[in-house]
Each structure stands twice: as C-alpha cells, then as structure tokens.
Length: 127
Image 1 (cartoon, rainbow, N blue to C red):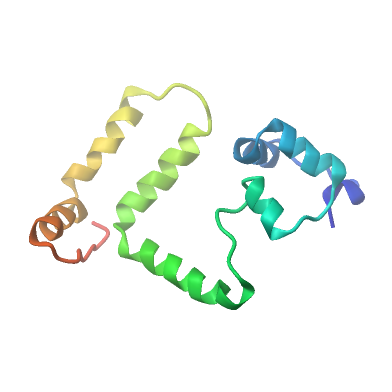
Image 2: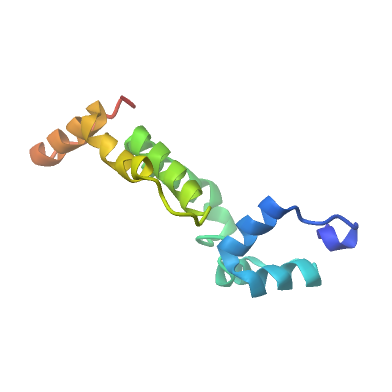
C-alpha cells in the first residue's frame, strides 16, 4: 500500500535516499501519486538495475550473487562504505581520502595482483 494512502510520511533519511536514487521530481511523483508501476517503469525510473523474465529470476540472482562473492570482500565493504559516505555530500576529510589507499596493505590486494599476473582465479580471504 503506498504510504500516502495510509497517512504515513516518508522520513528524511528514506526520502534523501529516494531522491538520491531517482531525483526530486520522480521521487515526488512516486510519493504524490502513490501508484504501483510495473518492472519496465521501475527500470526506466532507476529504481531497479535490471529486469529479467520471471522464469530466470532465481538463476540471474544466483549468478549475480556468485559474481559478488568472487570479488574481494574488503573491497566490496570499502565500496559500500564510500558510496554511503559520498551520499552525504560534504567534503571528504584527508583521512577519508587516504582510506582508499589502505587496500594496498591487504592480503586480498596481494592475492588479486598475484592472480592477475598468473592469469589465475584469485582466492580472497577478507584480510
């Protein structure tokens, strides 16, 4: 049920995330109209990254999960943290800017470089 149909306001953090995702005009359209739309429109509005046929949902989800799991977990954690921090839209501190270079001191970085040079599949440990 759309929130405007039950008298609930979208809180600032949730609205900020929605506006960051789709822009102010589309966010207000979604909130004011309170209508349900199909997958194609959700894709066009930037609410989802991809649309797959119903018969392939589980297969495609498993493939995406496998690709994510094969990546370096520390790097994924940092990317998630950095994306969340950049959404705040305030200048980065020197320490925050330097944090991106911390990856060079990790075992996962060394493993990634080793695997790349050896044309091998990396075995990341999260360290």
